[in-house]
Image (cartoon, rainbow, N blue to C red; front, side, top):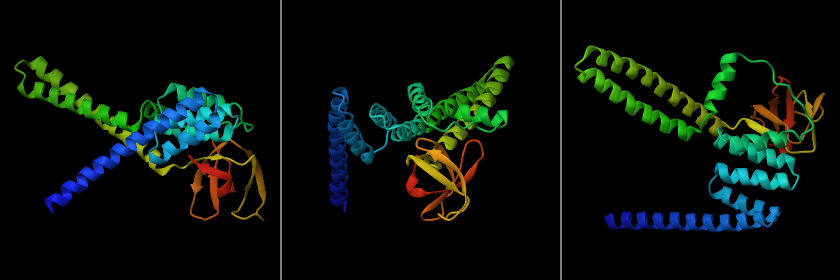
Length: 252
């Protein structure tokens, strides 16, 4: 049994090494094609890399490829995916806003409470992994401050240690909440991008339903009901909602 487990372990290491080498070679090909402005080949190669593991950098590069090919819907889709994985990246946000500026639909988000806007902005400072790492660091500092409180010989030092420990503990909890929020956003993936040139949003999940309004490619929607096989209920940032065919949108 020990030999079998050892063999399986080395086989796993060998497979991971081959996968990493394959990704590296594909990235060299994709980067070279992009440098030569062969954006179609670069995009095709980057997509092969994504199939082996999604990363913000590769999604960002795909967004750039499609933007240079003037495929705005695809560029927004991949910039959105990059922003989902690395929400605090200014370059991704800048390019996403630039691509959005080329869409037809102009949607004004509805008003929301200040706390909700502040919380969303705060969670978007960093990715889920970065928030998790920061939480670990804060927790270690909290333990150090607690040690100062327990073993400190002077009263002012003990009071300072206790106060700092409480603050760091609260910061650790907040960091974990932000990490959970980011991770939940990545796993649920409720956002989607309209990929068809134009989409008629229906009042019911049927082609015979009443026409509510029209959306154009590149517009972001949030999926509210995804239980049907061919239709999804979506809502816009301004609160409008209706049903669209799933083949006309792609989940971020």
